[in-house]
Amino acid sequence: MAVEIVVDKEKLGVNVVMKVGDRVRIKESVVVYHHPEHRGQAFDLKGSEGEVVAIVTQWEGRPVSANLPFLVQFSKKFKAHLRESELEIV
Image (cartoon, rainbow, N blue to C red; front, side, top):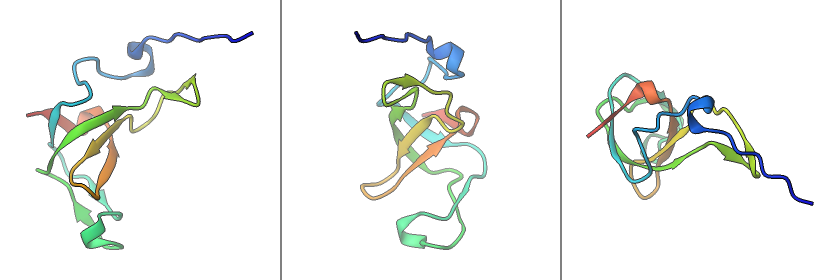
């Protein structure tokens, strides 16, 4: 017997205003070290624009409260997980 757990996105701390497919811009300084053109070096994403490709609310069918729930794709080779407070809709 399968059991399905239903949890509202609001309870997981996810903004329901942003959705998959929205264009977003990084509004504050976010430094990453996994950018393909700057591998191993600090790279600030502030001002970069991308598209929300996923909002992480489940893992293997179970609800999760991810610290960085928004997966944003900036280029064909580069994606990053970000917080809601770091993004603004373009």
